[in-house]
Length: 483
Image (cartoon, rainbow, N blue to C red; front, top):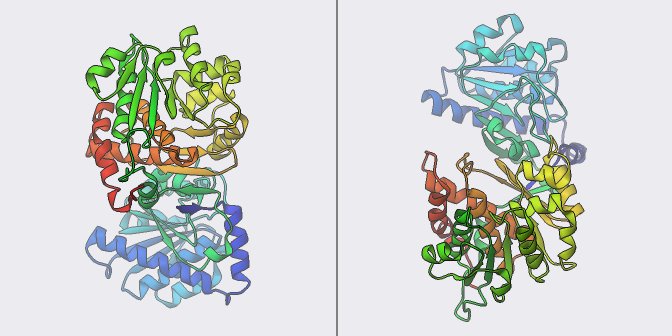
């Protein structure tokens, strides 16, 4: 797993590292990393490094110092470097002196439009991790003159470092280079950050446990259930699907199909859409009622069941079954409007809730707001459940405070029925015995990967995403371990 640390954690770790590092050494190490990335971007954009023009946007903090020192290193490669000093009196003195000794120039805001329009690359060193709020008026006035790719130092200026929110003018980076560890902004607002490149400055030993973690292909591949020679359809996990209705049979077909393609050993469907499900998925054992479904090792409940009394009875039956439950869609709405339905839950039985922002607001009484991480952690504690908050960056929180982030590969999942697929994946992994937090995170990863594979750069339907689930799982095969 890749760790993500808060700005407070980063600051404390940097103070410990600075105490045992020669003065200026860390900044120069970081700045050299910025220069390497800048040269790479210049090469990609213009085909060369020498005889190009780079404009530095320099604020008053250490990020401005990083940009100035990076300018010095770029000058050694024949790059024309001009620093726009937004606050000349507070510019990093040593960095500015180094740039000037190397032949770089420094100008004030009056000359900024001209040098920005001539630039082949812009380096954003306006503000750092301690800044909050949008760009000030003088910096914001420069945004219209930026036409070249932008390399941000640590984070795009004007974006909240811990929440990823934007409350006004802000930089949009093509690439962000960060030092020592990744920060929340890099996963909470990937659109603003662009590609994130991590430069090692020796900070990791000074950091404690990360506040957020992110699964990679290795984590998901190792976790994903693969049958061994002693397995059978029961030992692989039996997933129950309580979804759909006569009005919404598609929810049943999608959620059930997702569980089938996630390699559940057996899938049992229970609901009014049994005939439709059976015709699409002949391997599914389909019945008309949850009371007739037979034994399962996890339930998926909610998509398309309705929010009336019949839906409530289905939800109560599933919650009382004594097996892990993934509750989605109408199930979360029922919990929001009739919270006593949760009394049917066996104490200690794992529960995964998968709301989008609107369902989250109904469940908790408030929208996720700017602090999505804090909101999802609070909800997980409140419901004693794993809460998966859907979004371009999906967050998964456990009641014990663990948080996973999954960054979508585009917006292809913004289509009807995609949530039904996710619930089927979660249910299959719960039935296989995965920790609910990991099951939700791994399901979100494969869900997003399948969407990317299915889309191939154009919008795709939920049915298209469904068909790509095997390809997504297959892409992880080099990491998978036979059980």
